[in-house]
Amino acid sequence: MSSRPLRQKLQALQCHFTWDFEAKDKVDVKHNLQALALKVEHTEYRNRGVYLATKAYLYHLQGCYKEALASLEKAEEALKQDHPTNFSRQVLVTYGDYAWVYYRLVNYEMVELYLGRVHQICQSLSSPEPYSAQIPEVHAQKGWSLLAVGLRNGEEAQKCFQMALRGDASSQEFQAGLAISAFAHWTHSCSDDDQEEATGLMENVVHHKPANMEAKMCLAGLLKYKDPCRSKALTEEVAQNSLNPELLRRAHMVYRPQSLHRANSLLQQAITLAPDYHLLHSDLGKCYKMQLERAALEEREEIQAAAIESFQRAVETDPRSIFSRLELAQLHGEQAPLHAEEMYQNLLEELPTASKRCQQAIYLHWGDFLLHRKGLRQEALEMYKAGFLVSDVPVFEWKQLRKQLMNLARVFEQDSQMDEAEAIYRVLGL
Image (cartoon, rainbow, N blue to C red; front, top):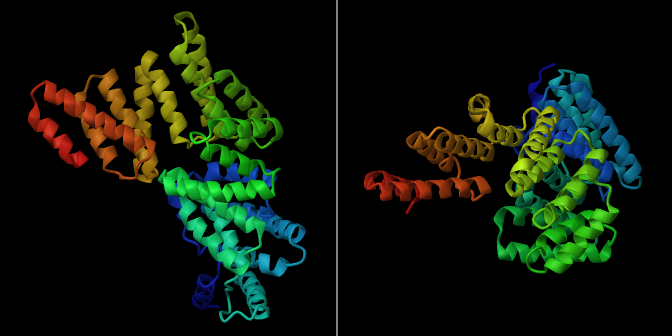
């Protein structure tokens, strides 16, 4: 049987294999599999099925097709449990994923089976297309999937939930999805208008579902500076009532600036619930680093050892975690600079496959090491410039690279090296 006609039918499906959200290039697959496992267990919505189907797609990216099929079987079962009255509308995406996985396995008989099931459902919905249907359930599942692989997808996820709501304006789950998407978009845009929109949508979700701890944690983030008292109250409510390790992790961030002890306690609680979730260990290491900045001389060695142990644990639970390895290299830089340099060299080798933000982080940390540990100003400058030019999205790393370039420009000016300073200002667009 020729695979070409099948391929054309597969391309017409609405599923993770045809939704281009660049999971392969922009995210750490292992991290997302960890995060999705927590989402499946603790979700506030009836979206376990799409999370499990998303896991199947990520397994496919790793070449783990046995695990992908197992996750799709779980997705199908979750959809039957969560949506007994409209299962056929909900299962379209999962059947599409099944067809693609079997196509990768060159099992064309099973591909035909699942294409047939999709076609049958589309016919029952009177869809003008044989292998797709523009229905709210599919739009919402794409929205949840986009959010599952990164908050950077918030704006695109918003569009999905807006389309879903056009078909079912009364769905509180679609409204919640829209609110979370708006929150996600705001975390990247930092726009006042986006913040106002997200706050209004999230207030509506909390009003209708006061037990929704995820919505309350999002609202706490939105109100952090506009209404700090309410933000802290919402955070404390989440900390007291949630057993979701990710929400406890986000709650600790609110406490961290004022109470490292409380932040540390929340992370320790979360680690007991999810000991293999690498971000918890990474954040615990950051808490210890903050303690290190304030510690008396006689306390520093013990706290530094605790920080190194936490970041080491983060790397053990996710060896591809670039940020945890950068933190380890920085901590080793003071007492074991040769070890630190070895770590940086290994990270530099990963630049071609790293996300843009990770690339900027590597250039930033390596530049700092060259400047402060080796005194190589010109070499550090080249790293800062290379990192700054990777992307102009104003994430933390980009801002720090810009700051370091400005500092070096001033140093060159003080040393009367005006040509070097001017060259930096041109890079900065000044």
